[in-house]
Image (cartoon, rainbow, N blue to C red; front, side):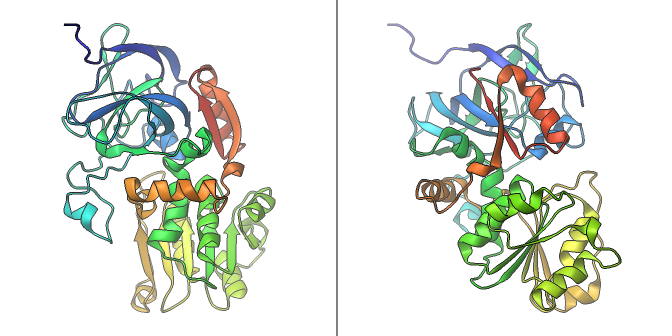
Length: 380
């Protein structure tokens, strides 16, 4: 009888051979999925600022490596004991897992799965090994057990979410990380209340998604803070009602300006850049006694932050979150339906589209501040 089990696949991938160097599109081999794993044909992926951090070698350094973690694809094959998925299913991989069995997944206040815990370092979550080899048979490291800059990838079943095929691929791709992180931060972490005030530091793709989430929750005043004057008009299309450019305030500070706009400070503040000094500004810009600051940016140089003790004693708080506090399998389909219903308008986040062979152009655009999200079509 013919063996029907999945076989290794040869395909193209963009490989990062050394920190900060241009990616090389080359032929690789992707192993079959092991037990509780799914092999996905990646239709499109996009470049996130976190990919830049790993590319620069600022975190969990391991080369050669296949980067990428925000993507949309189709199930190609499944390993043993995989239930609920079949070849042909449209899916998004996520860097967070959800097993629905551990205390973290069972908790209403936690989205950190302990059965298959999130780690920055390379290696599949189940056994720490890789599913990628180059043409010479040498191992290639993965990124957060996703590695979507490959035409095929293998992902743990806990990190795969079925997605309605009615969602356009490039929008589904955004729900794999950035858009979900921003919307979720307002919806699930901060729990923004109707009529409240919100300040968003950094109007990149995550910050603009926060604006959409705050608008969805009924915030009446959404203040965007960014050094780029072009972001004022962009922000308006995502729900931003007021714009503050720190470089144009003269002797006034961002905290003072936000205090004037909100009558003493924002109810909620979101840091979406990853700079410790901006995190402090976000915190000091919130309302005494009740202000919530949500940290979403990965600090670019791993710098700590120092906060005024009296402000903390007053009742202000600082919160962080992975993936906007969302449980991937539970919440991403909800956001997908909101996209279908036009309750979430994420189309404007996609500013550029390229093929796999042009992937380094996507890096250039993001590094030059010219793009929000650049979709990379893997078949081109």
